[in-house]
Length: 352
Image 1 (cartoon, rainbow, N blue to C red):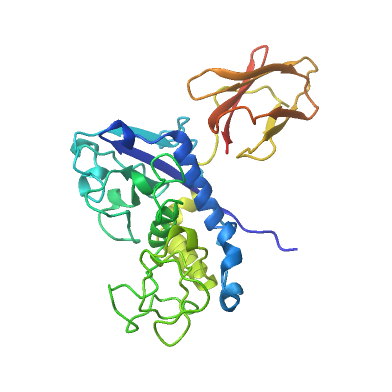
Image 2: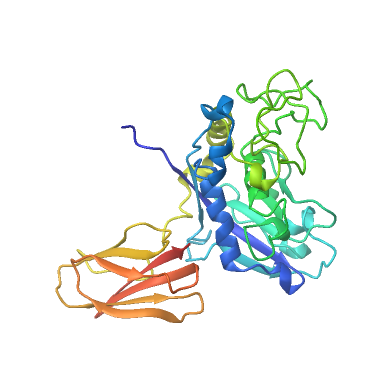
């Protein structure tokens, strides 16, 4: 069996807010990361509803999105920044959102991180994604309306309430056009540059089709993420779109390939021969881990939430499997702290 290729994409989410409702929770942000990982791995539940004519074209893109654990200075981070702005009209969709001096937040190195700004937009715009090479380098990334980011909290109003606005805009970030081509309303006269996505005239805005539909000569791939279909009916990238995204990754966004933004920061030097391994992260129900150590004395294990409050604390022996029941804990970002005498190891844990 061929091993599945996975490319880690470090993400930093800049929440730029004016009223408190716009200052979305960490949990809502994590729900959006979940959606990206499902959609870019062909792991979403809508896959089953794709018409048979397109089933063979479904792509597991192989991108894995992680909230950055290391900032541009090498410090440990949650991958989330929060900035209160005086702009109460809607800073989303404006150049100002990218600049701290204008009430937004400066991008982290756009060569090493996928920057996502979440804010209020004026009007009904859901999101904006920059194509490779489009606009100033320090404004590269995507912007999403706080009402359409993630799957709960402020993102509760159909039809764009399941995080697919972000999936769509990340597609643009990796150089995907709309299926009808780069111009608006080209109506069968332009192409998106991908061979296996049929030419289309219909954008399916606020629609949820089923079965086979036509707007040009071939059946429309209405369920493609690069349409405007309702979130509940979006389902796939094609194999050709996958190739185009990898071309963009290798030729325009290659810095992401050698970014260390997803790597944990060692907070303290651990003893020689000592290793703390988390078996599967993000974690859904059980946090499984191993402590390998040359010493036999117990280790103190703490699971600490973002407020610095331990939600779990027990002594465990090294060199034996350890399982922690995480179902009682709210989903979010935690830190697992293992300490023994002068040795202290810290690992970031994401509960989903």
